[in-house]
Image (cartoon, rainbow, N blue to C red; front, side, top):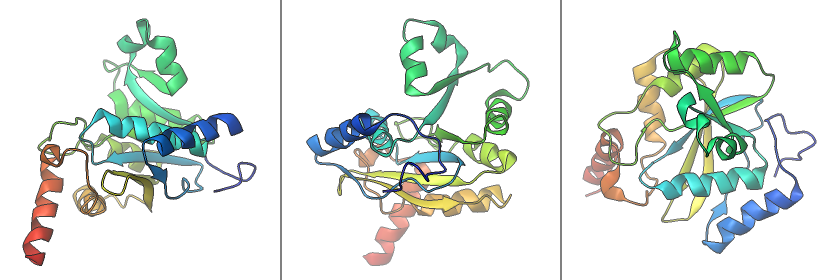
Length: 209
């Protein structure tokens, strides 16, 4: 693991919280295979997203690393009783009625900090969406930061940061390339895979059969 004294990525917690995150994963038979890439800013995307457990295991992995990652959510959710808990978990309120919406407000967050990591689920839902949301890509491209590709593999029971991807501006080509990283990752519920990932897996099965 990267020495916390030399790590460039935003950090939180201490030795106790890192040990707690590792212990939680171990209790469920999971493990973190590598550290977070040593970059000061990034949009972090996770997948495949087919279960609420995806986020739970990923959060535990981030605790183990000591990664201080943020999540943009609608501001109305922050005003309820769960507001303090959401802020502690890393939530940042976003005003969807404001010009530019989530993308522009996220870019502003990156510009205002020397270190910033934002977690985004491109599938948007765990129920087999027809296409990926492109907001994560627009945020990374406009903010001039890389995309860190994270996976939760339920067959191997592993959380892995597979790659650091730099957007080129070719949104369709880049997203297609990013999706290839998830082609062999086993989700909790295979039937809930998003349509693009199902198509990639079906092609691979056809080639090997």
